[in-house]
Image (cartoon, rainbow, N blue to C red):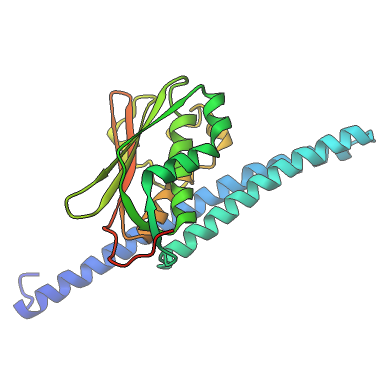
Length: 255
């Protein structure tokens, strides 16, 4: 306002900025609640439908066991979604990684990849690691982030390809890890949204229904808990998703 005293203009600008951020936060919360309702509705609806059909007439023991097995799978899916949501909620509340130790990123990638042998074999994918750097991190959290990155690259990538992990140590002592794979060509907007919760490039995307869209959001949360940053770049079908972590503090213990 032109009539506002100059000493109040900066205060008004700051106040307007706070209101704008609150509005954006409110919009994101509304969108998140809608996404949560949608994700939970599907498995709950599947269980209700299967149970109603099973109860519509007398069933054999084998038929009832099939229904129970189907419902168990949906319950496991619900349990995973709820656990991931609770983790993200704690991260939103400012929880930070505290149980830090010095970790070789290359060794951690190799160790994590061993647990994904079946996933790599199913997609006939191979792993190549270039470079190494030490970082200070909570091993269990870092392993989870790397697992999600590798799984995302293999499952949503081109079958039979080599997944390349590039690790660099920067001059300032920080480190970076980038997972590179070939996949469908993504637009700049789709690439920017990859770390958003419940985001899927498309419902028709390969294996979309088997994943609830929180994997990369959890990667982002874990890296932020360590004071780092995430990055995603998509060009001509080459997808590069990764993170950077701060330098290792002096005296950090080695495990």
